[in-house]
Image 1: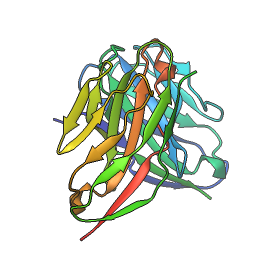
Image 2 (image 1 turned 90 degrees about the vertical axis):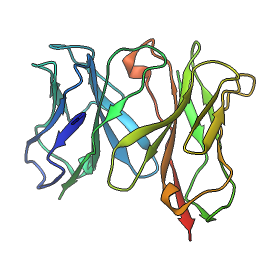
Image 3 (image 1 turned 45 degrees about the vertical axis):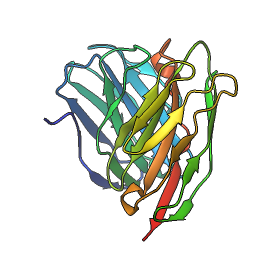
Length: 114
Length: 113
């Protein structure tokens, strides 16, 4: 029972490099989210998707792009990494937007940009 | 917009002590209230929830009551264990928009044997 799987788990980049974080869920969920977690700031929403082929900006979208070409996958891209993007990234999914619906989280990707 | 104020950590307690982690929120409409827990090296997972006023959510000995009049959802446990060491997040969730799903800043809890 995989749930939400994030790859890679760890990555170190140099400033200016690009990379893609992959999130895959096997629960047939419509909604998927990317968050970043920084010390003392909790989770901040980067981008989200309400269904295959759709994406929308969250609270802190600058410097990131996303794609949802398949329902089960939600990709987060960094085109030109900056040290300010050093963070732990979490993907989450949910079936609906009902008020009692919980989010399912991946185990996170720790990214360091030097 | 929605916001949540959560007790700052870290909180360090001895085993079997009583725990309270405060959470107050502002939200549009009638939010559901959640506590999520993050164990070391893992993602967040749901601990408990309450969907309407005066509801009490409970799980693993933790409890929280939805207090609409004080817009609070404080987390309590009567006797903490070392295994409760984790980061706890309060989350009022108003699902009128996916972008309104917000989390508190988290409270790190450490339990001494």
